[in-house]
Image (cartoon, rainbow, N blue to C red; front, side, top):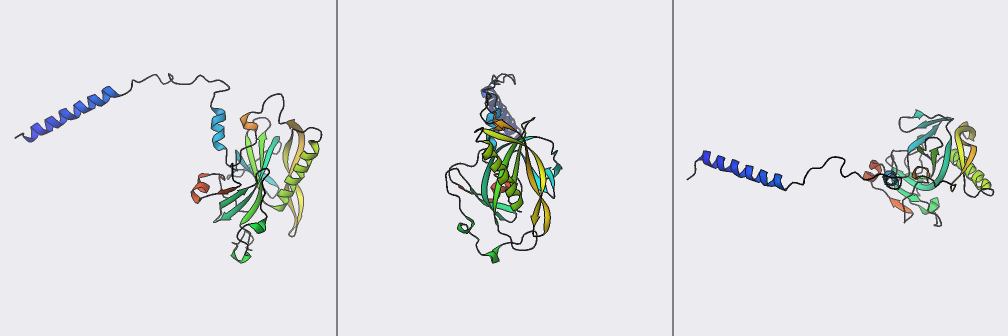
Length: 259
């Protein structure tokens, strides 16, 4: 019968043998640069990486407007209103807010019907949550998302608006674009962000304004880069259901903006 010392010695020898076998079967190591692709404008990985953001409603940095001032992101960093932005496109969606997070989104798709408010759920105002003013507020917000790219840097921005004043300014910009496209069908406006007076039941307030300072073309001699094309909305169905987990993960929203 083997002694404890002999058993431990045999176990150690067996372990060393298995380690040697595993090490012998490992793939040969290569230099870190050996498998890097040969980069070229057609195969540099940037477009593929940018497409990972497709499906988000908020793309790039979020633009915020409050009391006449423009800021960026949750940190509310002041935005330089002298910067010129190309207005790339717009997407309209019904967004339902529950517990200060989007729980359901209905996206307007080209050529497809878009529901009216009375076709959605939560018709009973007695069931509505209280808004910032303390009064019941409709959980469904008809929200316009406008996508911009900085003229110099091509950095992306999204402005999402559901207030009447903001949507009226966006509609005015849309009318200007439509009028200009009688002369230049593929035109996109270059704008600066400003503010304008807006009459409300609480008195005169400020609403966002988009001042057109020039025009560019969406099909010029140079093909638009991925950074300056209109972001892709979630495809197929015009109804997108969100779970709380997806909302927290940042798709399609990256923060909570109930009102």
